[in-house]
Length: 307
Image (cartoon, one colour):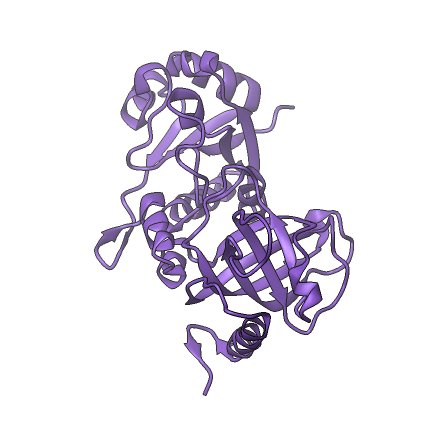
């Protein structure tokens, strides 16, 4: 017997508060009607196929979306987005990919969502073409009179305003990936850091130093043990005080932690912007500043600094 689903569909980059309002409504209505609440997204981002690869840079990678959406108790499906799919008339896509293949009998729309050839698939056209489907459209979500959007999140992050970004996201902005070998400068000066390798098109905030919550392991990343959480100081930049070529890197110093975690998955939730990146006159000056940053990070509590 085919599973019956209620779905919402889109890129959902950021999974911000506007998206979350849609997810909550979808889940509530689906559960009342005995349907599986399902979020369908695409890989790659549809703009990478229709316009330009890498534009926009991603607030949430596919795996970050999966982890977050599944944590809300919804099913998450990813469809490969191709030029051929983009050319499908919306009614053909709905009939073949949603109703016939995935048992969709209810659809939920954001206020401006459209898809299919020429963008002709939207709440009005689908409601008219498929009267057998239950359809619902949500209104715009505002924060202090401003529309919540992926663009608003990016603008906040470009200014290093991770607190403002968090108000749109409903959670801290996350950088995640594998820990790889870096310059190892931190090991030589007493502050060993984890060099984080994020996905190629991940959006990075303003260059500088941040307070973060570092998350290691957990069942979602193949570790049967519990997720471990540490306070961290994160540098996003070119490490101008280090010798050699200066490539953009993400380095995290985990407080009260000293383990070999190369190859492990690490997530950094950015909590506050500390200062711009700078070049120091000596290693001693660098060590002194990192120590001060670590003390500041240790005393950070919520959205304020402990006395």
